[in-house]
Length: 167
Image 1 (cartoon, rainbow, N blue to C red):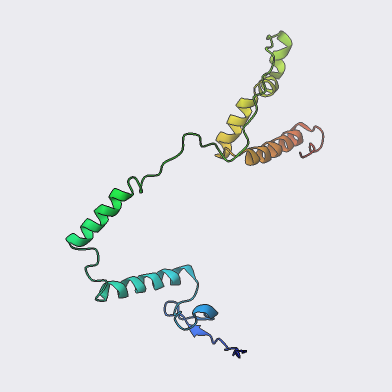
Image 2: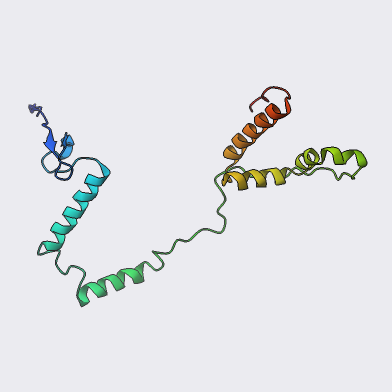
C-alpha cells in the first residue's frame, strides 16, 4: 500500500534573537526558533538552559545527597576520566627527519670569506631550528615552504639563478 507524501512548503521565520528571516531546517521546522548564526545558537542554548532550570524537573537537579552519591559512584567507576592521558609511545603527526651526518671539515683561510654559507650547508639542524623559531611552527611542510621563500629571496638579493625547482 502506497502512502502519499505531501510536500510542505517551508516558510521563512523570524529568529528570536537577531529578528532576521531564516528558513528552518526541514527536519526540525516545527520546533526551530533560532537561525544558524553562532550568536543565535548561543542565545538558543541559554534560553533552553533557563527554561530547564525553571522547570520542576530542573530545579535542584544536582542538589541533595542522592545526586552526590550518584556522582561519587560514577567517579568511582570511571577513575581519572577528567585527566588527559598521553600514551608514552605517541609520536608526532609528521615524518621523522632523517639525520644527515656531514663529514668533519677543517677550518682553512679560504673558508672565512664564506663562513655563513659553510655553516648553513654543514649544519642542516641549525637551519631547521632557525626557521622553526622564526615561523613559530615545527611542521615540516611549513618549514619547507618558508625555506623555499628564503632561497628565492636570497637569490633575488644576490642576483643569482632564478627560482630553484620545487620538489
